[in-house]
Amino acid sequence: MSESRRTGLAPHPRLYIGRPEIQRLKIPADTPLLRECAHAVERMSGEFEKHADFKWELNTHNAHLIRARMQQVRVVTLLIQWLRTGEKRWRDSAMAHLRAMSRWDVWSWITWRGGNREPEAIFDLSYGENSATLALAWDLLHGTLEPEEADLLLGMARKWSVPAFLKHTAAGSEMWWYRPEKADCNWLAVCAGGAGLLGLAMAEELPEAEEIIGRAERGVCAFMDTLEKTDGGWGEGVAYWNYGMRYAFGFLLSWERALGRKHPALDRDSTRKTLRFPVDFAPYGMACGFGDIGDARWRPVAAHYAAAERTGSYDLIAALDRVGGAAEDHSWPTAAELLALHPHKPAPSGEGIGGRAVRLYSGIGWARMADERWPEPRFYVSIRGGHTHGPHNSADLLSWHALVNGERVVWSCTNHEYLDTTFSDRRWELAEMRPDTKNTILIGGVGMRQPGETVTEQIEVAGHSCIRIEATQAYGAGDFGRQTIMFVGRLFVWLDGVGLAILDSVELAHPNRIETRIHTAGGTALDGSRAVIRSGRSILSLAFACSVPAVLAESLAALTNPNEKPARVIRWAARGLECRAAFAS
Picture 1 (tube, rainbow, N blue to C red):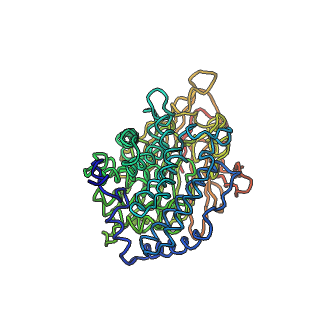
Picture 2 (cartoon, rainbow, N blue to C red):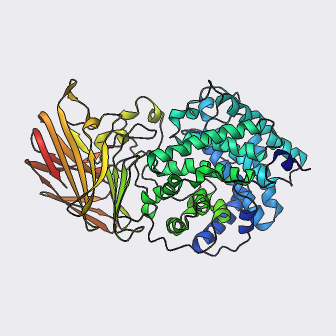
Picture 3 (cartoon, one colour):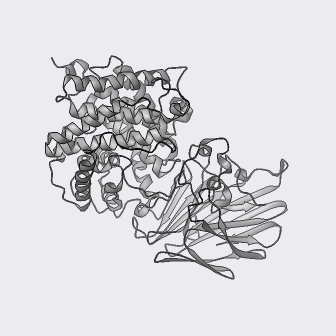
């Protein structure tokens, strides 16, 4: 009787890259995207083979996590190249990388900075990613491992992953990310999902595997339960959607294969909805969400394809293919995994992805508007309603982004790097977190309080689809605890793809300065109550009106990093102090 039968789990490879996916590696790359991935895997494998002890930057935020990702990209890419070609050199290079990994004296940047090198000191993102790397290596190499190689991989798991995960998920001593109130954070999926993959992969060798798998499943299920409340949206933004869902889907798909039955979390409507969320907020791969790193280039991860195939969402695959970019993604082994996880079959056109011109994710209050050319619209707008209670938020309620022909013309300033202050109690002093760098309303020179909430709804006005946001609560009292801010509201009116009207209404108990702002990285030209924004070959024309005397002015936003080009700020403001003002943009 084999060891696999003794555990009741499927034989190796039993994780999300199993026998069916390995068979796909033998299929010639027959689309532009897959050909790009195949070339990237060949090129990167040749580079990775040269140096198992690769260079990495120590003096940067979360340096050891970046090292963990670099290692996973290298190991998985080399193993995929081995499985594609049968050439032992790629397998040996992957093992050389794993030997180098066994010499690491600390896994976590957090504990390294604190001078603590105890393996059980923490279980953070680095531990989750390193555990996944070990899991995938063990699963794909199983049956070819020499005793010394097997001992090496098991030694790392037993020294670092197993004791740390069990310690920091134990009842009463769990780390913050394993607590129920933190289930909306990517940390839960990455940490629990990575440990769970290891438990599934090494089940025969780890007596603790059953406990690890159970705790991991509870964590990932709590993460997926969040989607039931958010209508499939993800308040951390599309970049962190990729991060968390890559590990959540990877674990759940592996759980299904290893246990031989379907997991209910993958059969929910909220799961099908969330597969469309990043597509709705990243047309042309231009991220237009509102979390940290909110304007980065977005590329689908391979697990997105695997989950789309598992849920029968084949119409989504063509839209993901359009975005492409897998060969350029070096954060994870996307090119390598995509060769295994892409369905390799023609998909529907994807023209109907997203459907309606206006779509609101009511659970998080984010909306998008797009013309009939969706998913490659001429004119696109994303809108920020909802609340700012979750992780990776900024004070950006009422803000919006706009693209014209895939060019970013209106931009809500966001951070592009992490500093010590980013996650400290002084986060809200950073320029990119403050409301004055957002496309929102300022009253008396300041914007919303943090945290803040709005009432966001989709309505119809005169035959036009609209998003209405009532934000009075988000602005607080206004004057020494007295309620002087009586009403703040914004209405986005979609003019059937030919334009957008933004109507703002502010009512105050006492006169104050009232202003709306629009930020752009493009060129601007102002003339009276009109403005033009030019970005690349695209132009956005703006016209402004106000119920009180107003002024159109321009300034620059000073960002935290002096190496970044400052954003231009178009300011449409009441000329004097007012109690009531209605603005139209």
